[in-house]
Length: 276
Image (cartoon, rainbow, N blue to C red; front, side, top):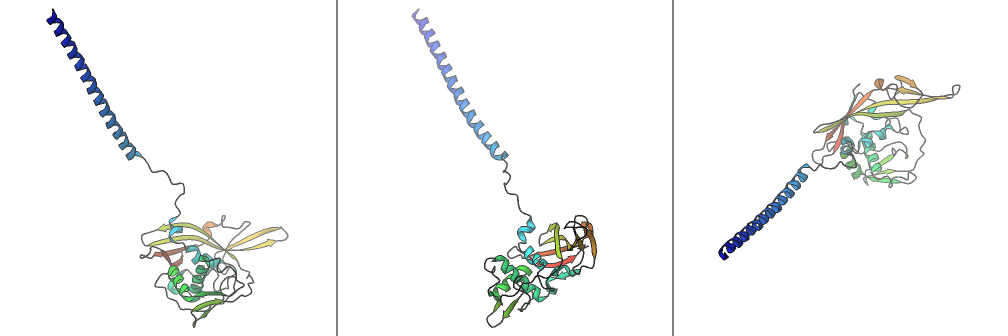
């Protein structure tokens, strides 16, 4: 009797032992499974995670890589300029930098210096001095390191920075205060229509129109006259609002080619062409 009870007790203890071992094994497997699942989820998260959209959209490549575009061109659209400077790039079917008037190059270099340091040159009622070495540096930035030029004096007025005298002895450009009467001219309307970027150049196309206006006393209206040339002989349209919305297709398109300086990655003006 005692032997049977002992065997029964041993059998029960053995069963409990196996149950415990089984539970421990299941627990270990469960822990291992959870660890594996954790790392799988982490891997999926890392691989599937997308980069958030930037809060500020990228700028047009042309605006980034040709920061002197408006310095080069639009400063020659000021209607206070002497005749030889005003709208200079739009007076020819094709104009290469090597064929540009020397004074235009010098003027553009000075305007770049003024644009880069507006507070320094803001007061045109005082004598202004610019080092010739700074003018040389600006010339190479605008027109490339192989640009051809010679230092020369400019004639005009202080307001448009066209009245600088070149002092060869001191290597300085000096401007004295002068009267700044505005000259009655048409305005130049420009509108960028296309920008093409290639490996070694950027091409910018824009519509260009010369616009005069006249106030009709009888009708009490302002009429705008859109011309296709700087001499205002090629009348394209007469409109009642400033711009080219009603005649855009008839307005000439000019193309500006900027070449890449491979040493520093910047771009400089190469030529301007009338394309249609």
